[in-house]
Length: 396
Image 1 (cartoon, rainbow, N blue to C red):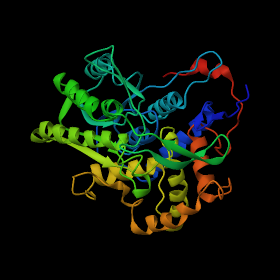
Image 2 (spheres, rainbow, N blue to C red):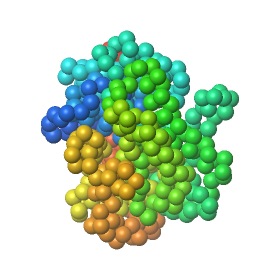
Image 3 (cartoon, rainbow, N blue to C red):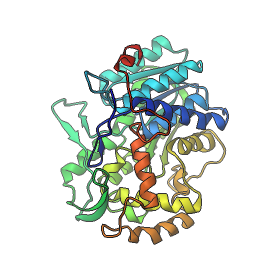
Image 4 (tube, rainbow, N blue to C red):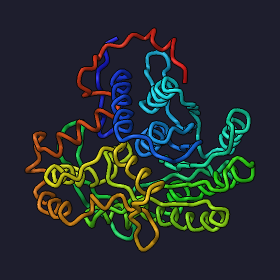
């Protein structure tokens, strides 16, 4: 079959598996070129099928030489549907890791469920030669079932708090800039978003692993946050997502109190802005990304997701180059928020309006290319032809 790219609004509805395989190989090579460093022996990545979770798994395996377990949740191929990109990322990671002599286990399951926690615990007990010494929490999901009441479902929203916000966002389907006005969240929506995107489930995972005896005493665990500049504050830092991240930081403090006495560590990393399938639908965020990507072409501070995560773990989590703020959070986003980069953003951002936007803008060209590559398209040298019989030989 010949693959065709389909984008509806800012949602990709198609995939090119061969493009994703090529992207996986390129990311692995990025880590390998930086060499091996001392780190984890057995890493559990929650949300390891894409973005920062995948980047964390790549540097754990190909930088640290770790056994890796990943819990991702993506639609597998079925009938004429080729599956979601995250499913293929898991497959190609496993293939590459095993060729390199590394142990890699994938679970396509909902990380929020108690049954998934037990599934992972059983695997660690039965198949691994020791406990988990790195736990990465990188779960981004639209909803979560209350573990104490299966009839209650919490749904996250991306909204401001207190007052409506109007901003411009990129419409990738029609390649234009559109105005959006977002109403403020209700107290119920704020609470639900915190349940989904905060640190509650992170704490439940740590407790479950610890109780089961499969968490190393000196385990490091890390959750990713985001601050961003003033340009995105109303919808992010000061909105429902920011509120959820503050809750996650409180979870980190509680976890540190539990893990610290035995030599463990609970960390929050404030990461850079990234082109992801999730961030593409955050109102106003894509417009800021266009300005940022163009600014970084001038300042030379751009990093891919895997480069960013490799630097985070190599230099800060396991290295001696920690950049920490007054709240104790790791700050690999310092490059993005540096005065030179934000100075350039401040000059570029006001000039990006619906009247001035064109698909030829340098920042947009890079943003669109990165977004398309998340689904395996716009990858140089990759065919759009796919033989469905290839599915028969895949091992998830």
